[in-house]
Length: 236
Image (cartoon, rainbow, N blue to C red; front, side, top):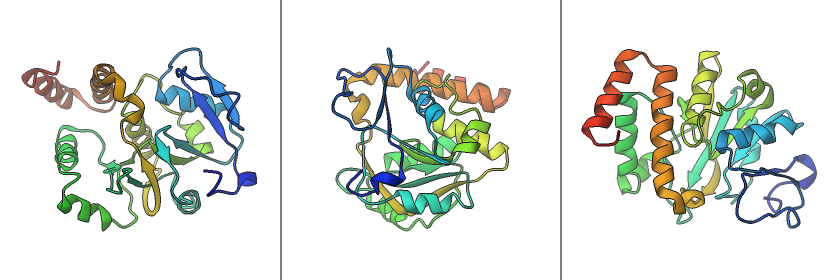
C-alpha cells in the first residue's frame, strides 16, 4: 500500500482479530491486537473508534493494492456516503462485488451470477459496468465517510461474518444515503483466503448472518420463504 499511496496523507490502522501470529514488532502502524476473534464488523469498529480521518477505508487482510484506488473512491464520496472499487481475483478475473439488498428474489439473482461469475459472459458484463449506485458494495474494500459511519452506529456486531456490509448499506439507504460502485478504482482480493481453513465455521456463520439479516430487514413473508428454502434444501 505504501508503495502506491503517499505515506504522510493517511493513517494506517491494523486490527488483528487474535490471529496465530503477532505482527506488532513488524508493522510500522497502529496495531490493535484483540484477545479473541471478535468478528469482521466488530474489528472494523475497533479501528474506526480511534481513527481521526474524515473518511474510513475498510480493507480485508486478503486484499492487495495494485494501484491507487483510494483517490477515485475519495472523489466518489463527494456525492455518496459509501464507495467500493472494482475487485479482481489474483488471476485478473473480476469479482461480483456489488448487488441488491438481500431478499428471496435478490439472492436468487445474485447466486446465479456468482455461479456464472467466471464465465466469459459474466466477465464481459462486469468489465462493462460503469460507475453506478447499487444497493451495496462488498465490505472487502469499502470506503465510507466517518461521520456517516458513526451516525449509523458502525457495523452491526451481531453479524460475526458476512452480510454486515449489506446491512450497513441498507441502513444508509434508509437514511437517504447513497452507495457507489466505482469501476475506475481497482483492488485485488484473494476471496476466501483468510477463512479457507475454517469452511464448516464459515458456512455456519453465513447462514446465521443470512437469517439475522432477514429478521432485521424483512417481514413475516420473506422470513417464512427463507425458512422454507433452508428446510427444503437441508441447510437448516
